[in-house]
Length: 401
Image (cartoon, rainbow, N blue to C red; front, side, top):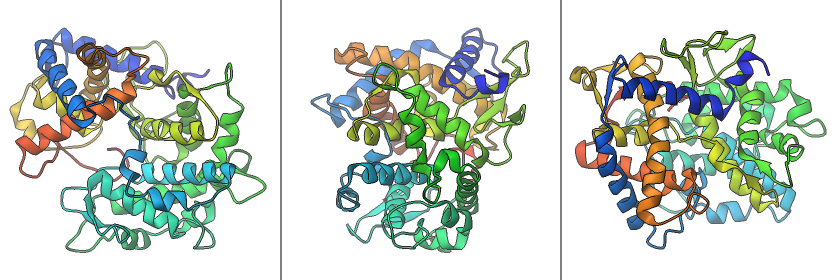
């Protein structure tokens, strides 16, 4: 494995985030103070939220499907009766929907014609992507529920904006960035027909064939899903770090990461790719492909999970003025915040399980995220800020958070 390829793994995310967390515990981070004593109250809150959301403690996986179901169940059920075709449709939908799922901004709303309901943020982007998908907006024939390379390569911000109901009075953060991301997805698919489909027009779901060949002891390791996504979809990420000719995607720089090779100073997070990996597990298992080792993936360093630890005082900025400023994703403050979030999610999970009386097998990290940390972060945001937004303002191009 090359130096660059070592960064395209969940192990790199976890290991390097833990390194910055260790610096925080030693009071050596540039932007943050870490207060471990606040973890007890944080775990109490997360356990409380889990019990409120799921009294029977039967928590599903943290995945894009939570935003699509039950409202989108009829649309999904009507795609096809063929098991293999349904898997590919679900994978196409999940990939496109997750790639559209960066922060929408606080003003945007989506009204779903099928249900008459109005949605915001992730839920709104999910329902909008489902409506576009089932209407054939991502298909070559403009009708079929699928995503084709040629159509994705040509999609414009104007077309996407119509589907997302973007207007002057309903602005969406990063619209052009989202459209550009879909175009790069289309170009990446078209450039790799051996991966994404030779007999048919290339589709994102062509990855299913790659994954089918990576079973170990009859199951597909979850890390293999993520690694495949990172290696084969790496070119879609705009203007990010590259090493040895390899696009690194959601990877940033921090001087606290010490290595004796070319990866020195680099810390990956792969937030959207991990969100996508989690979201592919259920359709794969429904198609008869068991997935193992789900806890190899990490928690997601986005503003709900990160906001939880900031709002609970587990981490505190050295400079209170950061709340008034606007930050870029590559700023040291944001890189440290995201690294701390990954590490603190790992630290919180066993504390939450202990409070719920559940084992790691019954309650892996992906359930801790869905049942508690993400929702606890949202609840605190709604309680503490009038717009329910994140505690920090981060410039978004529609491709990171």
